[in-house]
Length: 363
Ligand SMILES: *Cc1c(COP(=O)(O)O)cnc(C)c1O
Image (tube, rainbow, N blue to C red; front, side):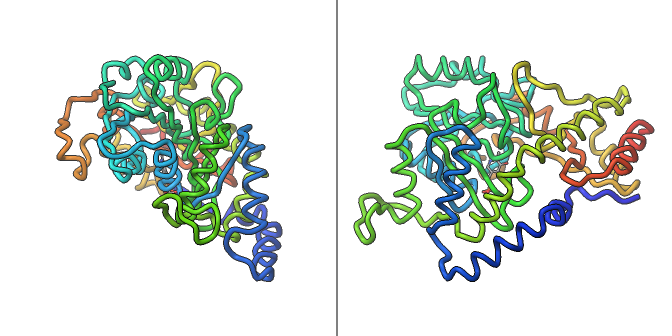
């Protein structure tokens, strides 16, 4: 049997009629940027996350960059962020002219809240929390530290659409929440897309101004902005996928439960769920000391498993000049050496799941 890491066509087939109706509607409308589809999406996405306001933007990296820019984070500022994340989280900080200050991860792959205070300096402006793999960070202590030190909290929700911390959806706990709609994310477009949510009207007005050349009124430019918009076609698609997000999250949670119940091999460390949280399992992240051998073994048996991510940000070549070294963040480095992700997506069949479980149990 052959099991691919991701098969987006299964989600497409499931909602094909809706996607095709929406696509034709947009094509025939004669209006392709900043129109009704985007407005609808923003209303629906705000309702889905429970935030007061939402904005569609060009991609997840831009969502983070626009959020930092709107908060006034820039040259000379520092932003505290976990070392174990997809590089885009750190790139957004660098792109606004600020410096990423890395800290280690906790046992649930989120930022280690107890490591934050030691990283604060008089230049620190914000803490970025990455709800990695689909599981929320420990937000209560993080919000308390932010409050005590007058720091902003930016949530990177690019992998965690719909995940909850003590009953609140991620993205609404800090000052601003940033989402990616890259096709494989829990809510995806059929191309690039991103979203920003906040309860702060002034902040949202700034985000919307910056995404559109820094202008509120056409041809009057208040800020040096970007062009980072969610086009009508992608907005229509992402609206459909927002409507089906909970079904998708439930389906991935059920697959994760089957893996947790079925995988029984002393070499495998299964993921754990933080108390009072819901996990949306964008990634099913196991750990194994013989990770590379396990990945090759699975590949030999037709199963594609991937690594998220082989190099933690503090050791990435692009950040060599920040002066970090191997050993600085032992948890993040252990995750980079031991993590392996199994296929988990809408439409993954029981025969495939069982085959994966049996194959792993014989490793
Ligand atoms: C995907 C991702 C991003 C970037 O999103 P893009 O839409 O690909 O730009 C940022 N942060 C994290 C944690 C991600 O997984």
